[in-house]
Amino acid sequence: MASTLPSRRSLLALSGLTALSATMTAACGTSGSGAGKTADGKVSFAWWNIATTEPGRSLFPRISAAFTTAHPEIVIHTTSLENEAFKSKLTAATSSGKLPDVFQTWGGGVLQQQADAGLIEDLTDVFGWSSELTPVSLQPYRFGGRTYAVPYDIGMVGFWYNKKLFAKAGITTPPATWAELLDDVRKLKAAGVTPIALAGKEKWPGHFYWAYLAMRVAGLPALRQAAAAKDFTGAGFVRAGAHLKELVDLRPFQEAFLGAGYATPGGQAATMGNGLAAMELMGQWGPSVQKDAGADLGADLGFFPFPTVDGGAGRATEVFGGGGGFALRRGAPKEALDFLRFFVLENQSELLASDGYLPVVRGAERQLTDANRRVVADSLVKATGFQLFLDQAYPPAVGQEVNDSVADLIAGKKTPQQVTASITEAAKGA
Image (cartoon, rainbow, N blue to C red; front, side, top):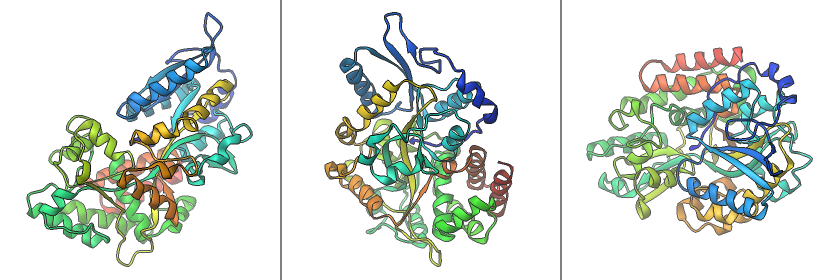
């Protein structure tokens, strides 16, 4: 995250880092990798996160301060970085063998490579309180029956929309099919409304469209089979790109969207929050970033799931998304896991009350009062299938190619066939 969001860059020379991970030494502070002792004998560890927007920007430091107040023998060195900056810094840290003690993760292929390289802690035997968390929230962090990270948020991607702008265009019901979505885009344009806000510069928001269309057209089993076979050239994936091109050809995005960031001034979230676009395809964090970057749409904001595609194999109850979690570098102090237990279990109510996160603790969904967040939570409970962000589910080089190729399709630089060929080539080389 907001996204939010998955790593795009390859983890360099991971096989050679296994030995390095065993010899990482204590280098306290935000630039180092390890835990150690301060001059007065306190335990110290580094914590990297992406809480640069509200509510995390204010909430995360409060939780950290509450923990160290209760445990004065512990010092936490916090580094909060914007999403893309975080990923670049973490990739460099991984390559050098100097991972921070506690760091943001979205699970999937990136985390699995870190686990395979022996760089992170296997938490399975020390994470006894995992039974208090929902299975779907743990899914992205489990491989081969082992658990490698602690979730604090889980959710799904869908369309956040401006009810007032829909009404202006004469749209009374959110679209349930792709054909209806395209028709609504035409109605919005005819009414002088920008249909969709998109952060074209950052690429990852664009990959949501192709991923969901692949799920709706080819189906989840086909998507997983393609990943296993390292072949995305099937007809369903080409059709997914063709459907995305149908949307792109309608010119639905805001002016200069190719240079727009996500949470930056004038970017996707601000465009949506300021009422300058009718929709954005984004995760559960969308409303909080809209408010932080622009304005709060309040009762004018609604949510609807990604539409089905006529003749497609996928169902509306199959959801695409993910959440946020924290992994521990190999050799991190036990106090770091104590902090995560405090962060997740003892502060679940604080996380939910902030309106920026969805529950990972069993039964905590009953605390939700916001109607839109309840829709998202209920959709997860009723989901018949779940797919993690593709640029996180797959090995880093493949995830990067998904983002790059879909961005090229949206920019008119690649055809649907070229997108699937490029992703396949990356998969075979991974």
